[in-house]
Length: 415
Ligand code: UDP
Picture 1 (tube, rainbow, N blue to C red):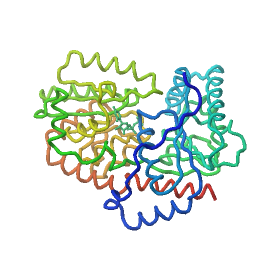
Picture 2: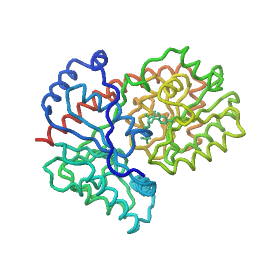
Picture 3: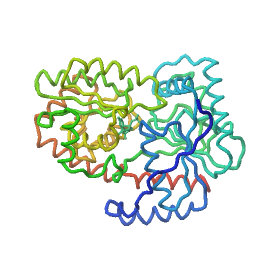
């Protein structure tokens, strides 16, 4: 495997003008003023995957937007062998509360890859923003370079496995600042110089979220073999136990007892740093093998952002039955498209729901089926929910707000 840190640049230069209609004048002024105040500083974002999962999704749009604002920002990836990513996936699960018997060999490999990555990263930046546990030890190995460091945690780490928490905590305490999505997510006993809370956001102008005609969405859906005249449920998620795809299948089967025409589409990109995903994909495909109304699509079969967009727009109810969730960009993506969402009552999901519709947050398979069936049978309520959802996302979860919050923090950290 390739070892070191590779460079990933924003492919699309964000068109700032396109946001003007979505932003208040005040927000636009603050954004441009903040960008000016950090001009000249070289900023580097570091994570472990360029595709698959919310962090990659976010950075692919966030970095070009910073660049369009005149901020010097790069995106670099760490590389590691599959064993490294198996360990970091376990860290991820352990921070979310799963048990992990962390041994010496795992610690050594984790630290070795991080040390190698720190060397490969070089010395060219004034500020590093390191995402999630995979590259978290880079700061430790970077030594005193005069640069500032921020660790950005996208996970709910409030009830972590003790050993993993004990191992990671001192590494994280070396950062000038740490960022969590919500105050409830902070790793217990973390003694940081500065802790900030910033929620992620979606980009309304990205291919994933741009307006598409109903006719185009219908064609994409028909082309995939799905019947657009029958009710359609959708979950878009990595094949991960915390996203509970098998629970979604069980909920869909319960809905089908009442509404035989219902169909379920599961879309799941396979991420390079997610070995567990392949196993779950196998199990989901087994479920689909004997059910002509259950469809499983992945990026491997050519389902990319545009298709996800079309399916989100073309489905009747979007499901996100997470058992734990850092944020769940897919929830905002669906609400932005005025789709009703039935989702796990966990982590960063509830804050994305407009208050009157929080009754569609669920705790189990039966609840998920009951809420989905209810919404399928009440088109008026679906419309109300969707419209309220879009307005809520417009106010709180669009990219310019995220860029503003992060620039505020960057300015403080750079001093
Ligand atoms: N996604 C995608 N194709 C897929 C599965 C997911 O494009 O097959 C995208 C999805 O639209 C969202 C991101 O990947 O933008 C997943 O982010 P989220 O925060 O929901 O979950 P994470 O994977 O980070 O836990």
